[in-house]
Length: 164
Image (cartoon, rainbow, N blue to C red; front, side, top):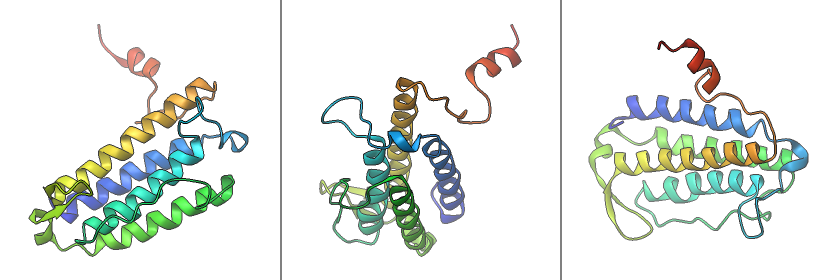
């Protein structure tokens, strides 16, 4: 994903997969967390929105990170959290769409002060989203909530369609 033509469609695809599992969260469980001090479902969603917009969206433009956490002060309640997530993703997407192709090989600074090639930093953002998507899947499993298959088939369906 070293060009906008590769990155932007993949971002859209990854984001759809994340939204798919987020939509499986029962509205009465948004504030559930596995244990005290861990992210709730709502925290996960706010974190994804804020990290994408305020850390990645800023650092890829050569600015310092403006990430300020994932608390209820950003959005509270299922519909507000979902709207916040969608709004910040739309803002982020506008930023990502303005990155010229030649900038993908330029260097940007992470919040830790590490210099990294911009396309690699964007790849890290997608890996970060996949990490939290996996946490949401796991948390839903802990709650006994049926989750959508990630790529269209469940594990059982893959076994059924496999040879040998």
